[in-house]
Amino acid sequence: PEVISGRTHQATVVDLSPWVEYEFRVVASNSVGIGEPSSPSALLKTKAAVPVVAPTNISGGGGSRSELVITWEPVSEELQNGEGFGYIVMFRPLGSTTWTKAVVASVESSKYVYRNESITPLSPFEVKVGVYNNEGEGTLSSISIIYSGEDEPQMAPAGASALSVSAAAVEVSWLPIPWNRHTGRVLGYEVRGW
Image (cartoon, rainbow, N blue to C red; front, side, top):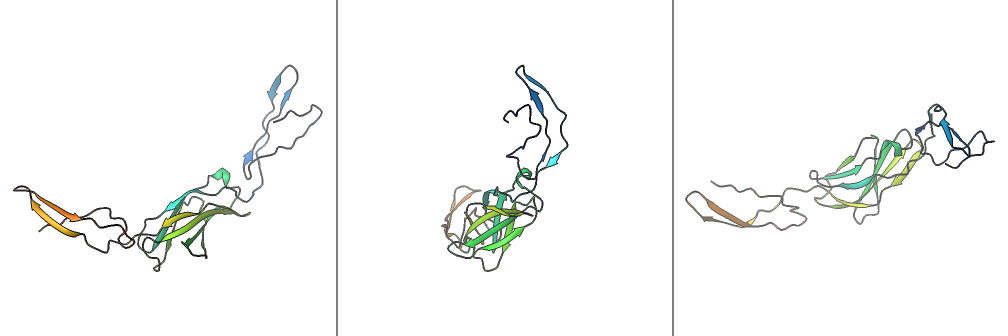
């Protein structure tokens, strides 16, 4: 901070964070040097303000059929700017003009799951997450694209064939299932024999 004249006995401290406890000390100085600091003042909390930092790392996806899972990195306590802190989750199907809004009142929350039977598997949604406290609604994150949950694969692999390679082993092969909106991501196959 800038040096204050020796004839001044008070100062206004600026650029502090809202809703944070501070204590202050005063140090006297002259041409010889700087003296010992005063004892600290009593703790003083600044007034609350609307939060200005939006959640980061908006992502999600996965979940079960008919679910949209949205996740984010929680906002740290020193950036919440007041009591009654929570999250505002907004989402809409890609191409839609109407946003659905949900309020998540828990400070520690980092996830919201929207369930609706009308959601088709792997549907893209535009998502943004914002913040609020008792002072009002704050900043929203930029838009992220998140896909709804997948369904189980609706088709079987084709072209299954078996070739005996030894007295105790058989090599089984098949054509992979291509990715599409109905199959989703095939994470693995199960080979059954009888």
